Length: 253
Image (tube, rainbow, N blue to C red):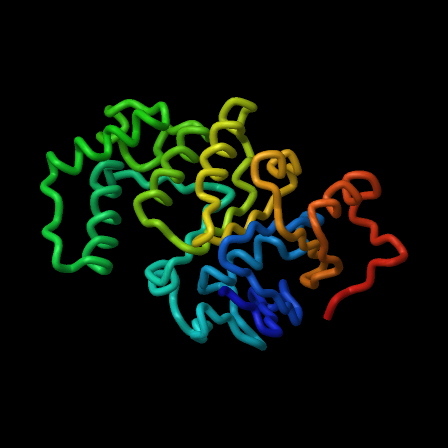
């Protein structure tokens, strides 16, 4: 279980989260929704451990371990993956080299007794997965994400998730910039990731994602606080009345 205990976070002098209590259970799908600047992405970045997001109070726990002081690399190694809204382009690093490196590092941690795959064996292995995603082998020789379309970047990200097999997947508005075909493709890929062993936390403004990933819980965030929690029906309410809190909604501190 991933748990936020009375979590408050600041970026510089600005408070972005205030006293957040949340539990993300294995096998469940959570939608984080709210106004722009309300703290949704800040929650994802704080969980992942980005250094400019400073915990000022409270803690983050993963499977009974306090990970508040761990860096991004250690959190990733423990099974947390964050898909960013804007995927960076990294010149000078070939996609094929990058994918082989992260895959071998994962194997080395999980099964150190297994010998690493030879480059030509890995290439055969990864080409099959690229083709399944509708991408050609030529992508392996290109610089990481450089010149890729939004949909191509997301498909590569889905491949990274498959290779790393994280247990807690945070998705920060990954539908941003996708055309309808790319959106459906990525949404279907995410639906395949929804297993009893994994937790999906979806930060989104696009409630169509719920057609492919029906959430177990919807969490509304505003001004760094949770103001409402409920079932998927809460999305319908938000679509009708917006984020202006109805009379029955009160901040959950």
